[in-house]
Length: 377
Image (cartoon, rainbow, N blue to C red; front, side):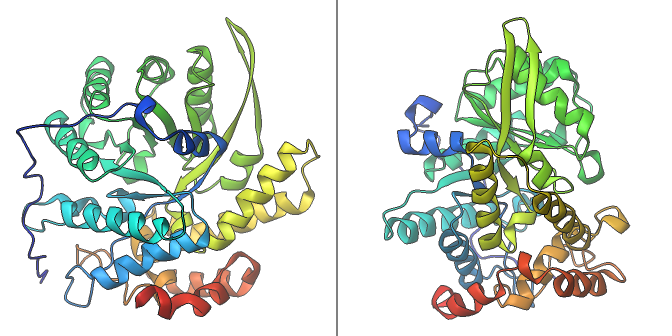
């Protein structure tokens, strides 16, 4: 039985005055950081054995990501479990509020400001309400899921996006169909890129053709200097970040890169992910050839992701898999999800054992051990 969080204020939003936000309103340092490319973990939800919200471990997770060097955190997204929005559960507002407060206080004590991303989904009314709440909690942008619009036309989808963009900056989201997304053609992304208040796009179709559709659309729209591309392709993280795109457009040849990642995979072993992104940026900025070792590591990262995300079972255990890695490190007390049926798949724990043993250089276990008590305090 799920015991619900006491705060039942979910989506009971302020109505007398709603603040809105544009990309131009964001601090210059935040805009520059997003443009340079960041590690943005998609934060999981901490629950105890009674499936109640666990603020202590949720706070520890946020502190971990900050000390690991993440440039931002995404909250209320798929990894945080969409069920937090259920009225009977009532966790959307408490989880977003706590994460924002911890980021402000803990990163602020280090004279840092993180890029705060709120997951937003549902029909237009719900999405606008969630965006309005995110603005009230000082989030900088929303990652806009279109999973609820499975039957909408392209024009309806674009109208929906435009209306949410009137509230706060958007991060477009190409989510793979296996976990609730839909195929979004080039024409959609070409029009989406025309929306003024788009700051970035997360590409997570797990498909090279569809990823290229987004890159082409942004370049063809002439928005390659203002919309930053982020990978969500957990099956191709390193190669996405290493690949230069040369896109022929009506305005000439555009050279673009996928600058960072907004990833569920980066919610674990985050310190190592930050070092990896820094290494990739250094190689590309210096104009060096791609080291063979980085290509080898690309496959190692994908192998880890297959275990964590349960690719063998069509990603059925992706959230419990992330939880299991964090549980082993002590950052979560267990693998519990809001849905009691959402558990590790048969054989998944053994696969996680295998990749942990095979690739110790990809983990940050020692970093976590040294700091865990501090984060939990």
